[in-house]
Length: 208
Image (cartoon, rainbow, N blue to C red; front, top):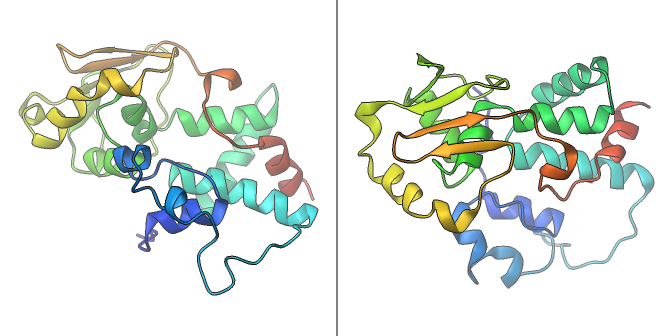
């Protein structure tokens, strides 16, 4: 399976913005964006005026890198969003937010989306009491995401749960820490998705 294997901090530096790909490290002074506020590579410190196409491309790349999806996957989400009623850009971000790996990250059971994806692939989570090991599985309103009983004493899980209060919880989900469960109350509206992306530029890019 294809996946990005290079340094994650390079992605944040390329966008000149924190994408919170490494969890707690992104909140410290060790964050690469804080230490080197320029793009990676030999010509990273050069200032360039971006064309309209380049701006659109950067917004698409930013969203794709944040959720850790491949180009073909991202394009498929866009086509699904375009077929749904409502604003295409908001529909796109809503679909990405409802991925199982992202929901687990939002609930606080994982430090970042990459870690959440690994936990799902290893079969540690269930949706409505049925084991799901597909990170791209789309969770629906009312679905309950739970951690397997045999996985509740994992060190990584205990560490993440201890930090839940500091990370905050989106209003479209609720979590039951005592029972290691979380529930999706409803699909998130655009103002409930904390993501520094101009989704309209992505729509313009794919509409050409």
